[in-house]
Every structure is written in structure tokens, then in C-alpha cells.
Image (cartoon, rainbow, N blue to C red):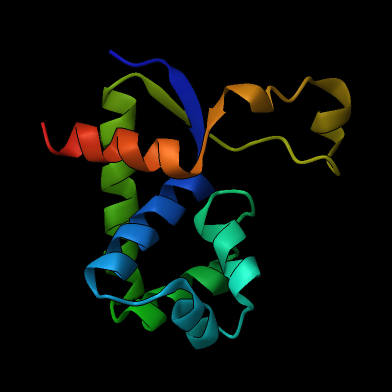
Length: 125
């Protein structure tokens, strides 16, 4: 069983990355469809920035699925990770009261390509 942490946004980013690639959509095109710059979209997909609810709806539409399907895929992947010992957490943001009282252990959070590889290995067992 694996141990580690990841964020909800990082899992969503991997889900969107896999959907985007399966539909042969480049990051720049996805960003354009959402009204974002490519670097901004890349930070979202890489789990370095958090998605807003509005951006989740935009991303679902840009990829050609409804929000419910995107949410279902997200929940499925979160449950798979949790079943394999990965904690999915909301990182403490620097501008919150909790951040002032707690050490945000960002070093233990799995993001981006590492999370994608982990999800791929778990889901192809």
C-alpha cells in the first residue's frame, strides 16, 4: 500500500489531463476554450493552483462532458487513491488563519506527473 498525500485540485488536474489527452486536445487549446492563458491552465492541471467551481464547469464544457460526469470521475479517482493509502487533502492556503497556526507540509503532497503515474498504475492493476 502506498503512503502519501495529494490535493483535490491535483487529482482533478490529472483527471482533466487524461480526458484532454484522450480527446487529442492540447493544453493551449483547452486553455483557450476556458478563456485562460496556457500557463494558467497548466498550473491548474498540474495541481499547483486550485480550481474554482466556475473553472470546473468551464473545463467540463471545454472537454465536451457535463459537470456531473467530471465530478463522478473525480470522486472515483479520489476513492481509488484513498483505498490505496493516499490521503487526499485540502492544502492549507497561506492566507488562512489555519496557515498561521499549522505547518503546511507541502513537501509530502504528491502533484503533477507523479500523481498521474500513481493514478495510472492504480487504475490499470
